[in-house]
Length: 281
Ligand SMILES: CC(C)(COP(=O)(O)OP(=O)(O)OC[C@H]1O[C@@H](n2cnc3c(N)ncnc32)[C@H](O)[C@@H]1OP(=O)(O)O)[C@@H](O)C(=O)NCCC(=O)NCCS
Image 1 (cartoon, rainbow, N blue to C red):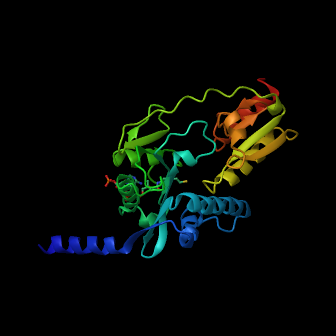
Image 2 (cartoon, rainbow, N blue to C red):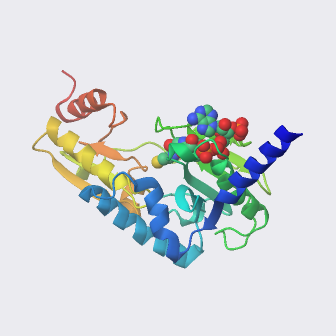
Image 3 (cartoon, protein in one colour):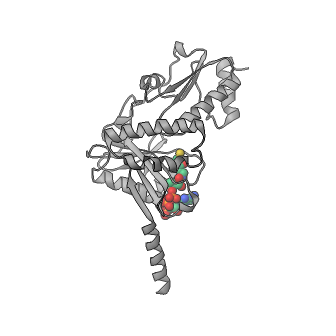
C-alpha cells in the first residue's frame, strides 16, 4: 500500500512538472532553444536560426500553431514540428488534408524517457482527431511522420512505430490514419541532367530545420576540397521551389549528377563527388 502510494505521488510530481504549449509568437525562442542550445553562438548556425524564425513567423501567420513545445520543470526540453503538406512549396504534388510531422526531438538526457515525446505526439494526434490543427480546422485524413536517424537517443522510426504509426511503402516515413487510410503520392521521377548544371555544384537548403543551412555550407566546403575550381550555387528551396522541383528535390547535384552519399560519410561522399566531376578513374 505504501509503495503504491509513493509511486502514485512520484507519478503525480512528474506529471505536474511537464507542460505542453502550442507555438505562439511569444515562445518561438523556446522552440529554437530546444534544437540549438549547444550551437547558439555558432555564426553559421545563427543564420540557420534566422531562416527558421522567419519561416515560423510566416507559417504561424498563415496556418496558426505548427509546433508544440514541452517544458520540464519550466525549461523548454522537447518539440514537435508539423505543417499541412499543402504548405510545402517544393513538392510537385501536395496531398490535401494531410498533416506532416517534420520532426520530434527531445535532446536533453535528463528529460528523456519520462513520457515527454509521447505527450507531444499524443497532443498532435488529439488535435488532428478534433480538427484543431494547422489544417484550418478541416479533417485530417492521416498524419505522415518523417523518419530519419540522427544516431541520437531513440530513432524516430522506432518512436513512431511504438506509438502506432505504420511504415509507408517507400519507407522514408510512417503514417497514422485519422479519418481515412493512407494515400501514396505520385512518383516524381528521376533527375534528368540539366545543361545549366554542368560544371557546377547546386546545393539546396531550406528554412524548416535550422541545421539545413549549416549543413549546406559544410557540403559546399567538402565539394570545394574535392574540386576547388567548381562553381557552387547555394539555393534556398523555399524561396526558389521551382529550382528544387526541376531537380526532383535532390539536395545536391554535382556536374549534372545527383549525389547519393550522405555528406557525414565523408570519404564515401568525397569519392562520389570526385567521380561526378572527374569521372571514374
Ligand atoms: C524519440 C524521442 C523524441 C523520444 O523522446 P522521449 O521524451 O524520451 O520519449 P518518451 O519518454 O515518451 O518515450 C517513448 C518510448 O520510447 C522509449 N524510449 C525513449 N528513449 C529511448 C531510448 N533511448 N532507447 C530505447 N527506448 C527509448 C520509452 O521507453 C518509451 O517506450 P514505451 O512507449 O514503450 O513506454 C527522443 O528519443 C529523441 O529526440 N530522439 C532523437 C530524434 C531525432 O533525431 N530527432 C530529430 C532531430 S533533428
